[in-house]
Each structure stands twice: as structure tokens, then as C-alpha cells.
Length: 513
View 1 (tube, rainbow, N blue to C red):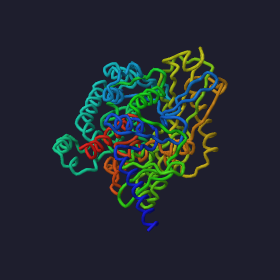
View 2 (view 1 turned 90 degrees about the horizontal axis):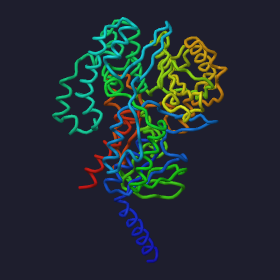
View 3 (view 1 turned 180 degrees about the horizontal axis):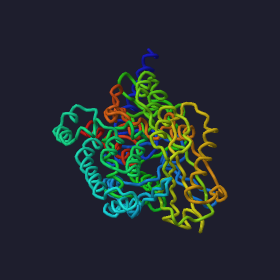
View 4 (view 1 turned 90 degrees about the vertical axis):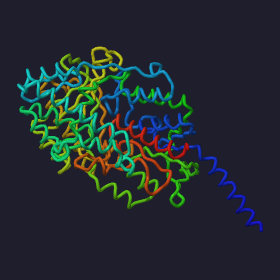
């Protein structure tokens, strides 16, 4: 009799706790998609708790300072500020009190080994004239390509990037059929490189536009021509700089989330997702159960299945898709000023196709890597770096981690980078480096739970990649949702923010009726 009463009492306690969790949401990970998810759900009236294993918010969008030099640790390109503006409008908060940004006249400056230098002006006509003057590529070819990129984005991206591709109602909607009617075969059946080589005449221009495949960690010689919509974001819509650097995006959204009542728990890694049959019931943190009928994972979907759900077969299924590339980054404090450089700079390899073959096929360090140099002190001198000095974020595309000797690769890449910069800029860059830190794929995985250090989850190196990305919900566990770069619609800040919007609409429809 006592045992029966005890059981009844325990069941009553559990049911009370579980029923009280119906308006609660647990978000795993305080990356940018996790914070955006928390804001959206809090605005919907949910009580939101975010659990983050690190001591800081932002995931890859973080910063550090060394001897007066400030470095954005992760993403460095800011496009589509409207995704952030939308969050503040949704929360009915004035964005200017949290976040300021400015448009840039030049998106990137491109350096080639033959001495050609191209300024990618965000004014299309100025850019087209620049390319024609520097390479001989007809300006009208640039303008027609950018117009096609715009039309492709407007006709396709609005549907495919803002909605789930894994729900029948979406796939058979009239909007989908209208969008598909506008797609030409070349965007589906030609590689990005083939499409660009068909459109442009000059190798410099083809290489410049092939580079946009790297925005989601893909290979332009394999990825479909559909990725030619990416230049629209940077060259048609514009490139921007957030005041204070990229970390200001994290800071602004974190403060907005706090204002909306979101609770953050740092240094508290989720150990397991609690599941009862096909229903999610909460998470385990620090050995304790935290109940909720809704759990949103901003963790890499592979690790969510492998570590938190112990669904090893589902984790292995994720791995059937090729992982995106990773990166190796040197953070250099430079005791010199380079007026010939812009905020964003690219130093191209001689052989782009060979570089990508090495990244994705042999997965080794490439001897002549394309180099990206970001210098935020160009916009905020004396703030991002000491007066007369510059903070260099020096990145090369690197293969995903499969156990390579990264200590060896660091040295190989560093040597190649220094030699290339010395040759093109005519300097001894080594003598100008005051401070140095390094980030490689192994560290990326450890800090951000990005499996194999892949920056964008899976690559887009196949025609069906967009449809093969993991959905923003679980087909196996009711109440479990996914956001971030490893799921639909993809990696990068704009798409991570869109994943939060897709997820929150699903939750609103299911739980707010």
C-alpha cells in the first residue's frame, strides 16, 4: 500500500512538472541561430532557457583581444542586415539603441598573381567598368550576370530559404511550382564553374565569381550553378560593416534576448535530451532533469544525434552527405599600415581548380592557397588596433578534419601565406607581426561542436544538396527542432537567422493554436 502511494505521489510530481513545461522552451547552444530562436520564441510568449557549454554567447561569432588588437574570431562578412532588423521589429525594440552598421563602397579587393587588382565596388556599374578596365571582360557581361543573379534570388531564394523543404504542404504549394518554372536547366545541371565559364570570357572574372561557392563551404567545380544567386547578396544588396566589429551582432542580439526575458545558462553543457517514446521531455544538465515539451538544438545535428540522443544510426545517416570545408585562421597584430588594402581582401591562387580538388578529394594542405585578409581597423582605426597598426584576420580554406597533422599543416600554411603576401605586396610581412593566434579545424570543432570542424555543416557539392540538408524538425522525436548552419537552409549568418525564423513559425503553428 505504501509503495502504491509512493508511486502515485512520484507520478503526480512528474506530471505536474511536465505539464508546467508546456510553455517552456529549452534551446541548446547560444550560437547566433540559438539566440535568434530564443528571441522569436520569447516574443511568442514562451519561457525560454538557453544552455551553452561555453562561458560566452555567439558561438562562432566571438572575439578576443591581445595587446590592444581586437579580433573577430569567426565570421567576418556582414550582408543582409534586414535579418537582424526584423528581430528588433518583431521584439518592438529600437535597433539603434543596440546596433549600428554602415554600407561599404567596396565589398572586396582582389589581388591576382599577375599583378591584376580589382576593386569590387558595390555600385554595379562602377564594378563592371572596373572589371572591364582591369581584365578586358565586357562590362555588359558583368551587369547581365548580376541581373540574372538578382532574378534567381528573387524567384527562388524567397521560397527555398524562408520555408521548410521537408513538409509536403511546402513542396506542393503554388509558390514552389511558380518558382521552379523560372529555373533554367543550367542552374541545376551545370556546375557553378561551367556556368561562369560559359558566361564570362576572362579567367580573372571566372575565378572571381567562382569564389562565391566558398560562402557555404562548397566546390565551384562540383556545386550547381544555382549558387550563382549568392553574388546578389554581396554585390546587388550590398556589403556592410557593423560598428564594433562582428561581435556587435552577438552583443546586440544577446541584449535583446535578455530584454525579452530569455534566461541564459553559461558553462552548462546539455548532456542528454530526454525522450519518452516519440516525445521529447526535456534535457539533462549537470546531472539534473530540466523538463520541457519543446527543445531546440543549435548544436551540429550530427552531434545532437550522436551525443545527446544516442541515435547512432541517425547520426551516421547525416554523414552520408559530404561535409563542407573548414578554415585555418591566423590572427596577426601588424605593426604597419597598408593603405592599399581594404576591409576585405582576397589574394587568389594560380590554380583554383587544383586548390578545391585538394580541399575536397585529397583533404590535404594546398601549397598555394587563396588567402582572405580581413582588417576591421580599416573602418575603426585606433579602436580595433593601436594607432598606425592593423589587426589582420588571415584565413585560408582548409579541409574538414579527418585526423590530419594540423601542427604540420599550420606551418605549411603559414609559410605559404607569408611567401604569397610578401610577393604580392612587396614586403617582409613576418617582420611586422607583433602578436599571433591560430584557429584550426580541430579547435573549431572543440569550441563550437561543428563536426570535423566543418564551417557550414554539409557542402552543396551536389544538385540535390538543398533538399538533403536536415530539416528544422525531427521526424522521430516530437517537439525536437533544429536550427543553425548544419540544417536547412544552410550555413552563414543570414541562413542561420533564417533557420530560426522557419523553426519559430513551426512552433507557433503547432503550440499556439
